[in-house]
Image 1 (cartoon, rainbow, N blue to C red):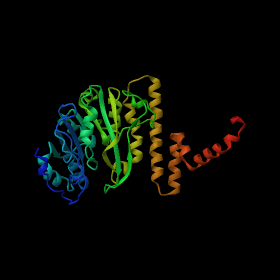
Image 2: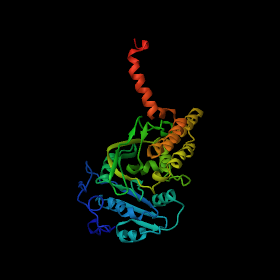
Image 3: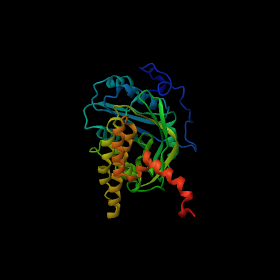
Image 4: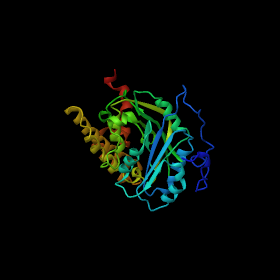
Length: 340
């Protein structure tokens, strides 16, 4: 690839991260301890997200990471995507723009080309934050027992303004079977996640092409059983929320699909399978709860809340009625004969 110092100015003429390098962090030429930085391979699946793609590419190139592969797999976009890819072609390991079978197929095509020690994918409307690749590499540190490194994410709007910061969490010790954990017991955001190639080779270095929304979660179910998961509190990536994104327009489909992802977890006994069915119901409830939070209509909010409670009764305590009941109980409990 061409030297990063020769990057063209941003086509959008914007400044600040990820457009210009003023906020970039400087790291030593070798890792602490003297080892070479591991190779990191990033696949960018893309389709008609040209308005965001340049920011995604620059957020990788301006990292200044010494051993980086970037594979852009575009599904034959008809917007400005191809023009951007041609402009940045000297700094990419490979790129194609041709019809494919969807996002998962694009990820698999990129991963087939990837030779890194750490492998991941980043959607073409998201972007990395300064120092993300170095932090991920140091968190792994060539540890033979680590399978996954996950950092936090910033939830941003379509213009890049921060809406929320979220940290990953795992309320159990890894390695572990994520498919048996309650939905509130873990959060491993894909945008901040890097997979160790040696463990991917065992779990399967691919995502399921019949899953349109939960292919990353299904991969997590497979790989987190095999090795340790290292969590970083600080954010590594920005997760862009906009109306055209899957999470912005297809929330219920995304959470319903987790039932299908869980069916692929064929290990374990009958009790494990029953628990996964309960978790799949809880995911459906989670989708309805998120829809209730986004609704601007009282009746639509109530409708989604009822469905959320149906699938996951614990959501009742998050409703106005549930909170009122809980507060009332707290007021009378000290005076109850049962409290004496």
